[in-house]
Amino acid sequence: MPYDGTQAGIGLGTVLSIGDTASPIGYTAVGELSGLNESGRQAGTDDATNFESGAREFLPTLIDSGNWAFTGNRIGSDAGQVEMETAFAALEIRPFKVELPKTSAQTVSGDVATFKALIEQWNVTPIEVDKIVKIQGQLKVSGVITWTPGS
Image 1 (cartoon, rainbow, N blue to C red):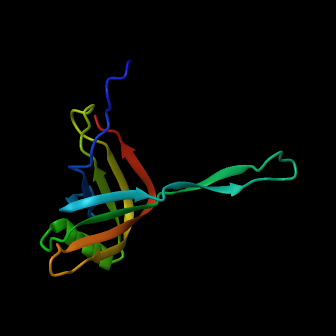
Image 2: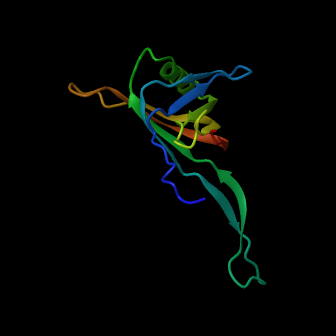
Image 3: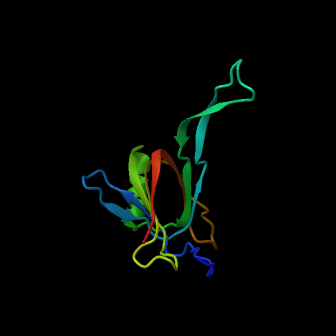
């Protein structure tokens, strides 16, 4: 098929949701986020080099699913932000969902990432006389991230 232009999408409309502890899981969107950044996702390795190796040899060990950093506007009455504060204070590992907006090639839904994580950082900053009060934090993923392609 010939190239017919990019199918990339932008982040506007992305939603981070925190799950509850019920079965089935219910999700609450975290309101007014403006940035979300996945980082540190990598495969672990161990050196398997031995006296018969012609060069260094490595075997995969475990996946480290890394972190998701987030920023946004602090909204004290937002149910998702309240739930994040509650989970942080309780040191709970919770289910999370990141829903990307549809790209031009998708008609029903965008791609979705689901995972469990600990809220490793949760900060209100900065608090200044002429600035919007913001939140910033980081989720430490526990286990694997499952990406489901949109359609």
